[in-house]
Length: 421
Image 1 (cartoon, rainbow, N blue to C red):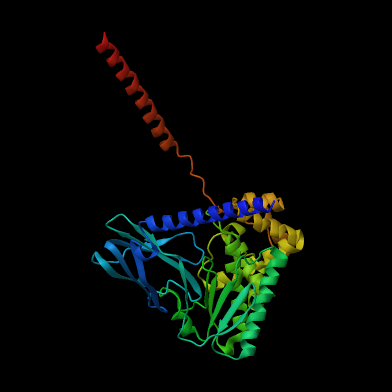
Image 2: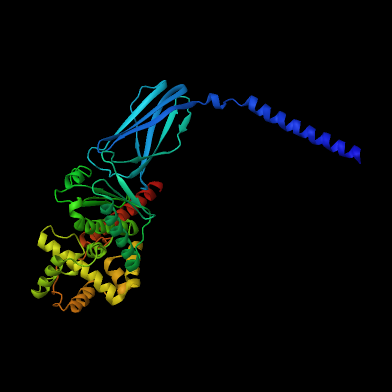
């Protein structure tokens, strides 16, 4: 028995030695080791200056000339991948740079950018670097931050009470949208509070209007608002409004479009809280004078005239309030979900509420004690996906083309048959 054990140990020892020898042999005959990679990255860096540029820099070395370098980058969670090809002279060792011009304010602060390089040499070797990320920040100010799982709020003017008041209002708005409309945050929202209107305009796109008080970037998960500490009351309303637009657009994000304007703006107004007196007065005057705007007109962009726009916002708020009171929170959440899945405006309303736009307008007016919907409404209801109208001339032309093509085929066949005979 002892002899048998020794024999087994010798066999196992021999197998171990053979396996070790095999591994060493494979390493010895491997043509390229880690120290002999065809392409090697020496440095991969970036420099960012807010509202100006991001400079991407790469230094790379190869065993033969590097002939192609491409930079790929993606903004936030957007599906689109951008690419750029920096200019350089092919060589064994090259340094390449690409400057992304952001002087137009196209990117807000707080956006994460992922980027990577692809390098190719004349020998046919390629190397793709591991993706790296950078956080595009506005480092001109010393930011304070309050954060939760759903929200991160940043500000630099005003004390802790100022930031806390805005943060609490934002959380309240998110809770309202979740409770009454089933709208939830899909990823943490970044909110940047600029301490003055001029500071705000210096942080967003150059084409922004002088009266712009804030801007939401739904695809990037960022909201920027200009709020001075002396204007906190207005700031809380603006916070809730812009935040609503962002989370609604994150949820209702389909290639077919978004919500009708009255529902989108109505939810934003509802997230602010009780309707402000000036909007209540505008709505009351319109009811008294029988000057309400039809729901079909409210489905498209609101007018720029301040008085008309105020009435549009007031009616939109009231319509949301009507749906919640008469149909309930579950129906409102269901309506948002149907729009998120993709539907025509009227189809979505009929499916959830049992009314089309005309019917909803009439029911709301009756609830408000207002006059009937004007007959002969000329404004068409915008749809999420407009069907192509059947044009008789187009169809006739298409039919003639088909007939003509068929005749050519027949004549060609007869000529070929005669030649064969």
